Length: 151
Image 1 (cartoon, rainbow, N blue to C red):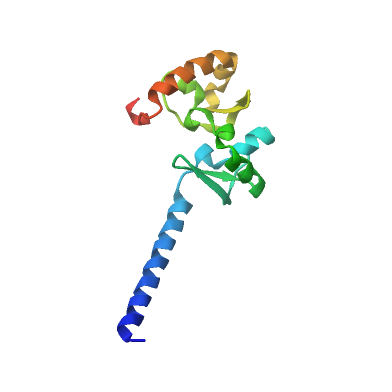
Image 2: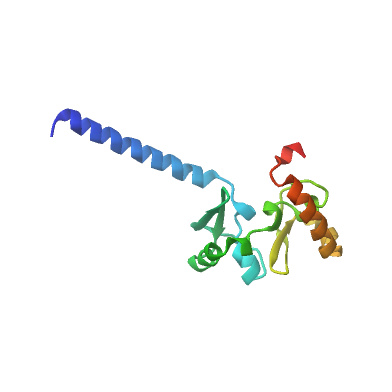
């Protein structure tokens, strides 16, 4: 094999290695859907459980983490069943046309759907869950694709 060919192979190998390292570095520092909590566990254990980077799925450009292979498998079979309402934004804020971040502990699984909230507004959400869902559902349709900073 010629020296030119060896250099070409070496260059290609190093480039692929560097690209792979960069991809894993991006994965290590990115944010995760539901703040990295397992969205399946909210349904099956009725509590927030931190997911593991060993078990993940990508849906609509968002990475979701799971505690184990079983939860990942459940999610992959039917993501819509487990995805949080309103893209994971605060459900109560959605009733006001806002997209706010949430607290993993401030949640409710209601009629099979996961609703996340900020801790300080969760009591307000719980006062009228059906009414708040009706309001938030209507507003979500209008602002779903709007940048949170523009609301």
